[in-house]
Image (cartoon, rainbow, N blue to C red; front, side, top):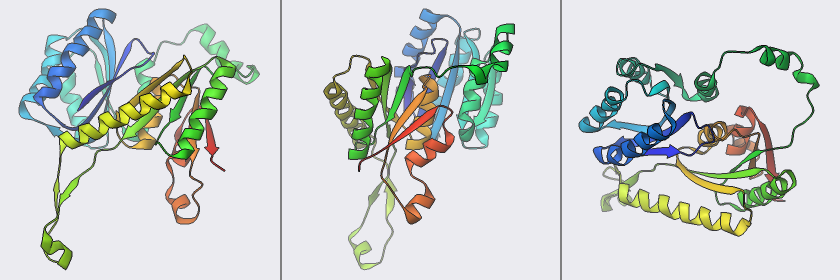
Length: 288
């Protein structure tokens, strides 16, 4: 699956790649990418691979063919992944485009954004850095809400809308949809014999993804706020929210807390992970 994530960064196209990429994925992706290039001119692209299972042979060629067809249309390409061979892929991809290509590990997503958006510092930037401690607190402009459809997250959404009305801010609600495996379990398994074989059902997974989109749209409509948007993104909750917050220029992330204690607390909840990794303010909303 190739998914283009809407972002206010007009000079950057954000792409999420999950599962096994097929020729059909590129038939849907390439026309949209070329439309954005025609509209915006030369762009930078941040491609985040998560739960990635590789390419079909024809799909891999389509990936490199984009670079051959548009050698001057990419300023920078940041490849974000969690496997060592992504670094090699970045080196190979660099030969197919005139732009810069660089690899980042998943836990370097903020550094990837810094590199993509980097500009030459001006005198005003230097003065701004020197006087940063003297700056007044600014109103929130872009609020991201982590939504897992729990009562805690629904309360977080309500609090987000309340703050957004106060600050006249935008609200972007994101739900992370994780890839999953089905298991073909034989009768003997219930007796302790045999082996459960993992099976992938893309049609069922897409149905569940579409259902999540519909549910999220209904929640956003019910919120009754004119500056709110919703996005379902393939990926794990914590990493997806952190990456999405960067793409949306978020100055506040709001998440619901399940109030976990003991072992669950030590292992870390999504809210706890976001709180420790985000570069913007984080508000954790409790149900009780």
